[in-house]
Length: 247
Image (cartoon, rainbow, N blue to C red; front, side, top):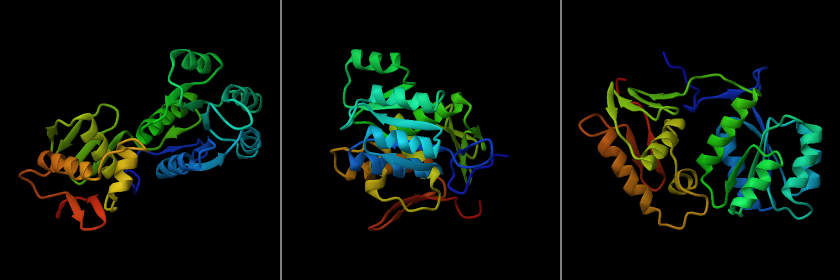
């Protein structure tokens, strides 16, 4: 039997059962707010800092399990901040976040001791997935539930990317899979088009909201075709997924 949290997500918890802690360091408030929102959806405790000095002070008091660190900050660069953080917390995993995408910049960050590297613009889902991997590998947290999300007779394996409904395998494209995963992590919750764009596409996605309608229609053809519908529209509000009646 698969057990999931009330939000349908696979939970990562500290060994003592408390929520994972993540420090987000970026001087762009819009990015900090979006990242914080996405990470709180995971059930994690979040603190943020806008410069290097604040990051070190916050890390000392907060004792995070991972850090998302912008490479370019007002008072010092990310590599200098990394060095100070590691003096306080030698084993803490650090995910670099930067607008630079040159190979030499990636090498510099990883050589200096960074654990992973994401360039802007980025997918919020990608940042979450990379952080989950770093935290798991560091041993800072345990997986409370397995990797399978279940809503009614629909299941989605986050590791193998296998999707089934009533035992029948369903093939999804990468974007369809991410959209379904977001819906299934929030069962019975209405998700607006802007929320879906932020989570499934990049935070600064420049397309129209009708791309959400298009991909919802794709999912319905594969998930609901010939069956009682699970994906529902709330006019003027958004979309939700819930178990079919009787399941």
